[in-house]
Length: 250
Image (cartoon, rainbow, N blue to C red; front, side, top):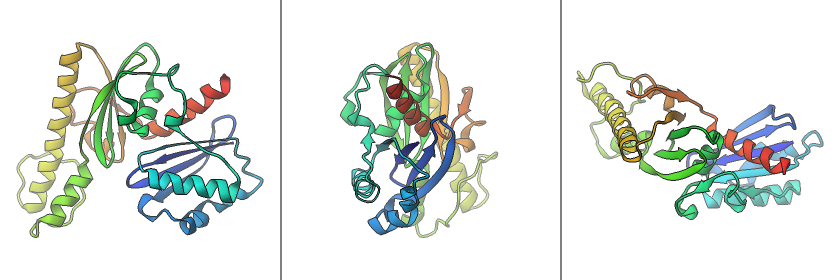
């Protein structure tokens, strides 16, 4: 069986797949709560003989969380794990920027879509809103913008008269009260940001792209963005699964 983990700033996704790449179990943990006790509560079931973990791979943008999880897996389950950047990826993807400066999740996203035929722009709505550009099997680089929820929550925390709210899609631009005005500003503001960055990438590279949205809020923006887009919320996990499969084939 394969254990695949995506460690982000907000949450940790852990997925168990069988040898046929069928998802058996998915666990969501809070990154801020990761301790040995917390991991024991949620992951000790993996000690059962039912789960014979052959390959364990993570992508992580939170080194402290990864180190705690790795230590737990080694001590409690006698299982070694590997972080994506520890692998030799040259035959899977040609990285045209400093590898140390790219988040493992973004590399996994890129590897997930690579097909050596098409070009891709991946927009990931995570703690940050990131854009990654892949041409054939080349990772060209990307853009990091403030995350939607991070920015919204910061405004709510810092501005006394801004009420708590959850962002939803908005039809009208003009708000009739504070809440609807904030929603409109964030929604249409991010639509404009996304459209403008995609346009600039296309103009500066002079290429055509397939555009994929991923991350928690991707569904809110699909219909509002000018470009034709598709959604794949499991892009990062799919990339890690693809890596394990290709490594095993070798």
